[in-house]
Length: 230
Image 1 (cartoon, one colour):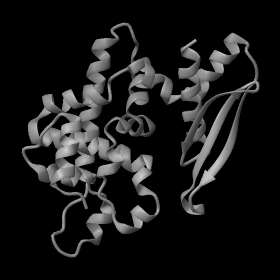
Image 2: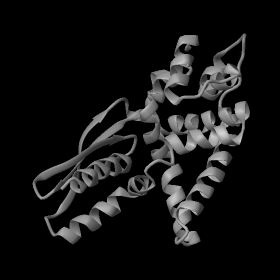
Image 3: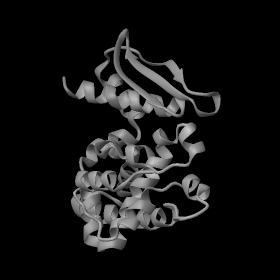
């Protein structure tokens, strides 16, 4: 359980101070913790996340509609999906070290829930919902634009980095692209896979994830960033 100091630290990090701290606490609370409490029971983030998801879709749709007047509906839909998908939200959450503030039950904590992308992404949406309930749409919009809608082109790459990297390597003709699973951590039911991507014999990126595909996507994303430096 986190205290007032940790809540203030998170508020300072995101640049928003809640009038109703209980909204923030609920947004951070996983059902595993809520279900363990016999007294002083608090709701979990699921209802607030439901609301935050809707606010995020509205704000991101409007943002992309205005920013890209030349793009067709299908292109906008794909770009929006790339920016609000689970891996992208978990990636954005790294900027505020959100995993530090999750309120988890003992079982969820023991099985690696603090690093689980699905939980982190849900809490990102729950915080949006909490800000919306606390101060309305404009405050939620400011938070979304600061932490999720920044660098839309970069987020588009993140969504399907393996395909983007394949196209870049084929265009340059610099060598054969291959992925290797170079490590596994954690118990059988909750593994984290580590992947590396190579072009020829040169390693361009590394990544980790709950599935081999997620690890490869992150490795490909790092490789793209490396190639773009050249």
